[in-house]
Length: 406
Image 1: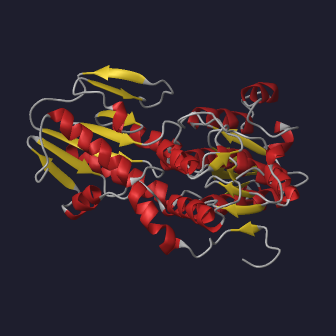
Image 2 (image 1 turned 30 degrees about the horizontal axis):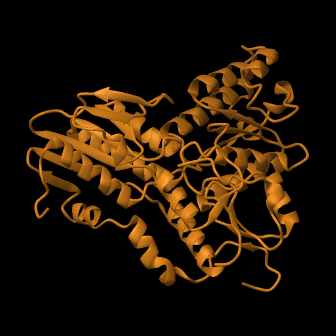
């Protein structure tokens, strides 16, 4: 670290020192064994089929590594996180055990809401971790003004979207962002548009909302009706007649990739119909900003679901967007259960889970079929292998079978 440097993005060169702790917390020899066995595990009449892409992605790995390196580098200093570093309760709980405290955030998927501090708590003697989702520009400027050392773990795929949104704003294009408005990443992304004098954004959550935007573009919806629909998810001072003349599409990187592409095509089609093919480049822009890890995990679960499984168990935090989408894809082919961890599998008769397309946590009965059963298992990009192992072992235990060698 150079003298006077206040933002660290490349770590402290302590990977080997923290490796034993990371392996003790997150590694799974069982998962490695399943991968070497063509991604299948036999236990009596039960076959566990693991998706070929699952769990921690590069961006999450990097964020967790940087957090552990930071604690190792500064054992005596106060270290804060602006919000959950990733959407996984196990990982966030482990960071709390290391003495890392939270500045803000819902903490809905964390063990408790204790020790949540405000930005006013920060001093120049402290260290602040920026999570993989990034942080809004206004918050970043406040943190810089405090003089604290910032360790930025923002995923490179997220930064790529920011650059696209910033370019749109610089060129006078409004960003139409496919995402969940309250998600940390979307909050950070939309702030990149409004840092420019005329930068505007509109966040659409799904194709139904995108259809309304297209209806306005085509003159089939009144501006006041559009503003009512997007009252909470448009930038301040949004004026549809002015701000939807030139638009560029972007997305929260963990959204359903196929839907992001469909939304872009819908908006492009509306702009073409409104202004003509020759004028389209003056009114519409789109660059593929879908995260490759998100795409890989969605492709893998689609392949697994189509191969024929009796049910799917999807592991990850309940507030994890990419995990929720894996459950949605699975539910189109078979019963799908999104569980946070092994504790949600209560018994062979009951399972607590979050159904696809809902935010409600429910308990379902008679979820585990009898006889020969193929169960697909996958996990969101924030889920450690150790948690996946625990879920698999709990499923096997509930089935009444034993693993060979156990």
